[in-house]
Length: 209
Image: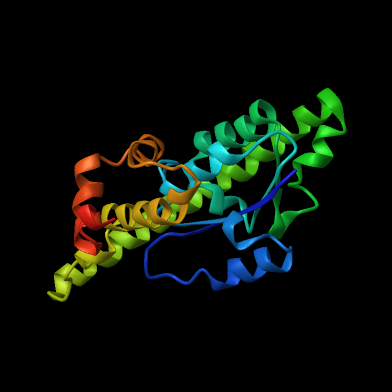
């Protein structure tokens, strides 16, 4: 059995320290804490997908809160069920551990599955509604800024695609010695080889690696 932690913030410049402190307090090894700096609107995230393929039956995955897993109603339910029922790993949500600890539901058999589904559906719906509200507030803020002539947009270095590629490179360089290849990383993250090679060349010419 292995213990993992998943940490997510919505943008590359947000601070992960609060979540990391919680994971470290649980004694989770640094290499088993997976961090994404991307929106929770879907699950096509570099580190989450890398974590997903590492999980095995009996493992435990810790989240700070349910919305760190994601903010899409259907996606949250699908991922939770896949991890807990297909992979047979467990999920513990730290800010609501009394309710969201799949180990407790597992011991209750079929009635546990029913209760888990009902609770998960309710909170996943709340998480998605909050995401929609945040998106609406952001759009209203941008519109107001444009109206005042002060909106400049997000700097290119912080857009999600660039952040995702950089994290792909970090994962590749860290895991290379354990058999991860560029082909494997591209398969996991769905980031094209050309993008990966271009960024790698900027860090260090591939011919010298």
